[in-house]
Length: 506
Image 1: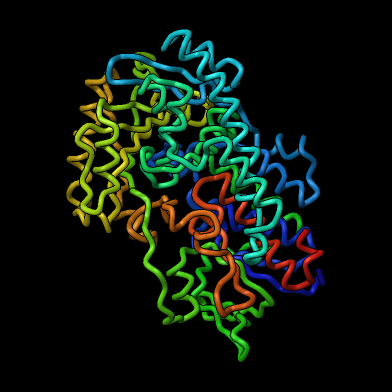
Image 2: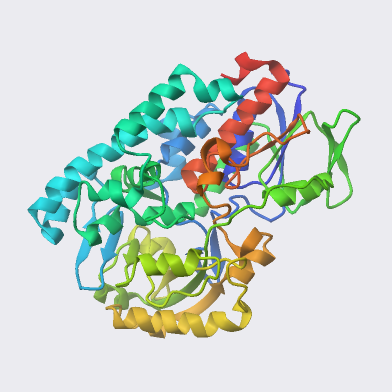
């Protein structure tokens, strides 16, 4: 690529930062425009009343993708890992069930069957050995062909590579239902939850999800979860620092207000909040689809999107010793007795809050006490899934406080003594996300329904604007830290192909 090629990236989340790194590696002159004062997007660590909290994504899987992104800037894998200060989260999850059963999922997959045997018996352990192998086979068949790949037309969807991968997924039974596929290996409904709850990350109830989403369970349970020292915000900080060192300009508190087009429909100028215009040869936007359309001033009618459920997330403090009485880890999933009903409540057209909820409790201090314990108080966050605002247009400004109190009382009764005495620092809820510009009031973006997955998901090439590309959760391959990092690389490859031909994109 010609070094004078000018590329703008809108958004300094992980997708935008990854895209910028790959573009810079090809010699492009890259500027990243970020509306906030810091990098990371929805992956952030914030100080609230003098205490640190991971206030966005908390589950980090496949960190080697970020290591590889730093490698594109000439940083060795060893140096990248030192900068990221990655630590294994062990156990990856603690899973507590309504009947009192508890499963601690080891970081090392080889140790998982023994943990399962202790909690559920020898037959379940044998089934999990086979299930873990099946998950890895699904990953191997799916990842390179259907996730980390730009499709350029019908020929790619029908070529030999795609047909072979599709045949392998069919052989594996990965095109049927997720719950049914997992039940072939483990009969215990409680254990099935451990390998299917991840479908919520994709915004789809496990009993309605396709088994291809088993790949998510391989990413976190099969490969283990990690955490960077200092909190999840370190990921964005490290990437941004490396980009700056490599000559990429990152403009903070510089929201983009418009993308001006020339006579051929291409974007020629990026207009910032100050009214200044920056001339460009290509743009990668990590904004949601409708926000990108607004930047273009587009009145083009687009299909209606289905969005994932949202969440109420409470961040608060408890005396450090109190958590020693909980059955918990860095990530604790507390399952209510209900399951199918719960997903019907939060994903239905007429959504409602969970009547017998399942919750995610995050105690980042388990892996990083020096960051998340201060003045004898430990930072704790609780996530309660809720309907999004399209499904249930609830008055969360008034409801969030009472609902949070109810959730904390419920958890206290389930074996987390003192949870109802949590000193609340902040509550985020669907109205919070909506004020932050997230459609439907959800931080989990567009759901992976059948019509919105794979090649049917919003493409990363903007129709009728030949030099505008998309990255992030709303486009391919989808939601979550591994997918958005992949999306940045895919969008950068699109730009490289546009500016210098197909060979540059390889």
